[in-house]
Image (tube, rainbow, N blue to C red):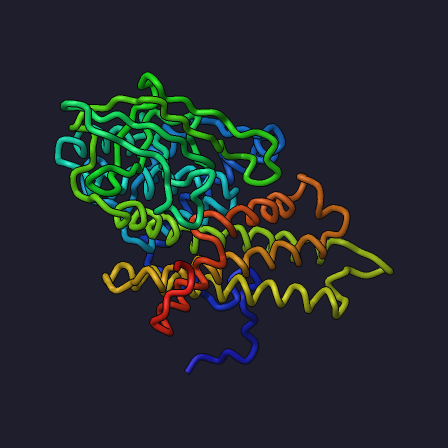
Amino acid sequence: MADLSFHTPDPKDFLDLRSELSDEERLLADTVRSFVEDKILPDVAEWYEAGTFPRELAKEMGQMGLFGMHLEGYGCAGTSNVAYGLACLELEAGDSGTRSFVSVQGSLAMFPIWKFGSEEQKQDWLPRMASGEVIGCFGLTEADAGSDPSSMRTRARRDGSDWIIDGSKMWITNGSIADVAIVWAKTDEGVRGFIVPTDSPGFTANTIHHKASLRASITSELVLDGVRVPDEFVLPGVASMRGPLSCLNEARFGIAWGVVGAARSCYETALEYAIERHQFGRPIASFQLTQAKLVEMMVKVNRAGLVALHLGRMKDEGRLTPHQISFGKMDNVRNALEVARIARSVLGANGITLEYPVIRHMANLETVYTYEGTNEIHTLVMGNAITGIQAFSP
C-alpha cells in the first residue's frame, strides 16, 4: 500500500480528476487549453470591452476539429462526449463567449442537420461547417417566447414547391456573423426546422448592443420578412418541438462542462492572488476568512467537475436523460456563479478590473444562468421527473 501520509493534493486538482481521464482525453484537454492560452486569453479582455468576437478564429477552430466534434462523419471528428465536454471546459476557462461560439456551431446548428437532415443536406452543409468555412446560428427563442418556445409566432407556409417564412428570433448567438441559420417555425404540419442562408432576401440580422454580459460574443435579432426557401431546405426528420429541444439538450450538456472551466479560472486566479497579496504584513491567504473562501471555491469546482465527468460517461454509454442534463446545467452553473462572486470578493477592488478574468466570468455566468433553459425551468424539469407532476405549464 502506498504511503500517503505526506501527500498533499494538488490545489488546482484537489480530487485528482485528471487521473480519471484517458491519455487521449488528457491530450485533447491540454491541446485546447494551449489554444485558449495562445489565441484567446491575450486578447479576450479587449474583445469583451469592445463587444466583439473575431470571426477569423473559426478557421483555426475548424482545423482543430472543434466544430461538431462529437458527431460522426461528414468531416466531424467523431470524438466521445467526454472529449467534447473537456473541450467546452477549456474553452470556457477562456471565456463563455468562446465556448458559446463552438457550442452553437456544433450542438445547435450542425447537430439538427446531422440528426434530422437528409443525406444531401448533410453532405452539403456539415463538411463546410466542420471546417469553419460556414458559420451557423440557431433561431428558436423569440422576444415573447423564451422559456415557452412552443408559443413561438414565427410561421412558415407552403407556396408551391417553396416555403415562405415570417417572424423574428431574439438573443441569437452568432446571428450577425452567421452564413446560415437553423430557423424553427410553426407550420400546418407541426414545428419544422429550416436551413436558411443568411443572404436570403428578406432575412436581416441586427446585432444587439449595450450588453453588460457575454460581450465577447455576437448576439442578434433575426428578422424574417417573407423569406423564401425551397422544400429541400426543410429538415425532413422531425415535425415537432422534439427537434429544437433535442438540440438544446446537446448544448446544455456542453454548458454543464463549460462552466467548470469558468469556475476553475476564477478559483485559480483567487488562489494565486491570495498567496501573493499582502495586508497587515502577511499574505491574505493566511487569514481564516480568506481560507474559508478558497476552500469553498475549491470544493464547488471539484464537485462540478465530478458531475460533468459522470454525465459525460453516462452520455457515452447511451443512458443520459434530459432530466439528468438539467441537473448538470442547473447545479454547475449556479455553483460556478457563486465561485465567481466569491473570487471577486477575494480580489477586492482588483476584482472589478478586466486585468483579471473574474468580473468577466462573473458577468458572463449571469447570462449562462439564464440561457439554454433558466435555472427555474431546469428545477421544474427535475421536479417533474421526481414527482410525475408537471408544474410549469397549464
